[in-house]
Length: 247
Length: 360
Image (cartoon, rainbow over all chains, first blue to last red; front, side, top):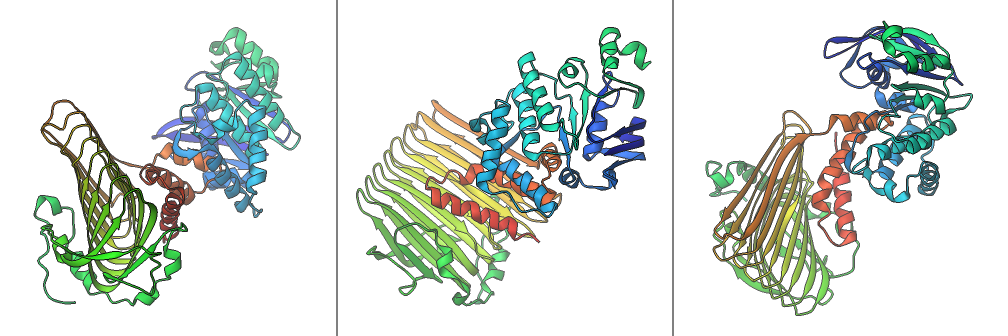
């Protein structure tokens, strides 16, 4: 589904990714772990197409299409979802308005009919309920006045409504207490653990991986994947730290 | 329609952001009134509807529902309003009346001068919706007088597609009375909105603000003064301006607090949004305070759309143009949302929408 080969990327002319390769198939959950500054968030932003993140070499394809050649909104319409480490606040635009605009734009891009107001509200209520986000919060402005945990839960509500095929989740576990972590993890499993979907879970800590058990774990250090393995690699990292393994 | 006009000079401080030469050009435009699809120009609310074509009351097009106009003579020393001096119309709202009155101003090319005098008697509650359409130079002088505890909610849309619209408001707000004026410039014409609100009675409330949307080489220019003459008055000036391409929006908002006008509460919020690097926004908040127990806040900011928000929206599948429109609408909503009447507010929002729809 996602194939990254020898990816090099710079931010403000500074090389961050230095030859990263990775293949993610449908039905798989991959975790990317690594120390601060390894390039984890850069990988997420490059896949999402954030301006300022420049690919200098290599390739990334999504379902055989050249991902790097698509605008960020086209990537979303193709089925890619980027979960933000720091979800952005948008004053004056309600969650409901934002999501309906987003969902309908994606549908239009795929040549599908727009969702009716009734169906949309049902879907929003359903996804909100599952993640403990009230309809009241959904009517509030996007992430404005939300706590860190609420913002992350809101990301998952968005993912549930948009129903992507590939989710790249950038430190979705950061800033969550243990109860919220469980809610978010349940959301990821419920929405994305399907044979036709895949997840790239970027995280610092092992605790999320106890709840969303990955099929593969990769260690990212200095812009490259230096080691890959199964879930046991995450436990090893937790015990021994990145020092040895990422060296 | 020719002949030289003695227009204000851009060399004077109050007119330095204006382009009076646009007025001369606007007078040369020719356009018949029949181009206007009149019914679509009114907000769908009950109440009398008055139509003025080229500054004259039009019997055929109006639905006054018993509302009467009286002739007036006006005199203003204002550099633009003085062209509108002379015979005009008076609108009087009797004590305790509650009504939504709509006025459609159609300018059929050339110049369109009209003085209006609006009197809201004690305890009346009036909503006035004014819409300017057509082409040419429309020039208005509006005198507003509010009696004790009278309320006027005035919502003015400048939708003329070509030419120039200049408004001059001179308002006097009595004891415990309230005037809220909201302007929206969302047409193709250049505009100049001038106003002076005098809070003449104790505990009076005055508000002037709105949204100015400009593109191409358009210029919008607002210049408002609220003067607190008596104690315990409150004023708000919330202006939002958006400039794209090579356009320019300028806002000068001033609060004056007279000696003795204690417990004044004044607030100004002037915000500008640049959609292009070649566009211009000018914002000039001013305070002049001669009392010592007052609360006056002012803020002015000019910025661009939040890039993080744009990428966030794109990552959810919202195309760039749609994301920009959504953020810009949110930006001007602060000003439009001051309109209390829901249907009127919605109509103004859809004019903002229409402005985005008209983008090339």
